[in-house]
Image 1 (cartoon, helix red, strand yellow):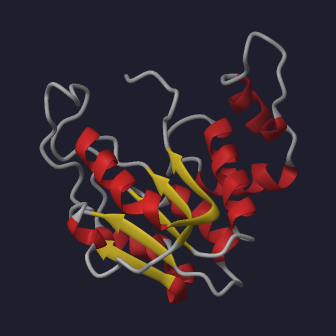
Image 2: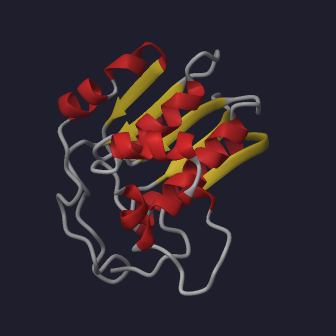
Length: 187
């Protein structure tokens, strides 16, 4: 069944597709596939980079949590470490979008209540820090934090720029700043 779903995302050119035969990934992805948007290759990239970042000094972060599906995938690599996992989201959906820069989005898109997401992530909450509110204000008080991994999925131009301004100077050597949908055409 999963193989048929992945076939939808197969390239017409035979390319390296490790996500199609990685049993551990398929198990993890099947647990969250209804909670995340996009192709399994994006989830595989997320997992692969989180796995790498586990060995890098610094904490983990996700800006733009929505339903918490990608946070569940990343949390697998933070558990059993001394790292903290920061989750930044309004849990009210997107703020008002700039129609010139963000014509594909509307205020309130991607809304999922904080309590629903916290419940979904309850097994990991001992080392998670939910920062509920609007970016960049949710970064307040974390100026001295350092990050091994930051996953940015905030969709809007200004929030993405604010994430770059916050996370980039706080990445430790070898740290990863991953943007969801980078290289994908807007819909």
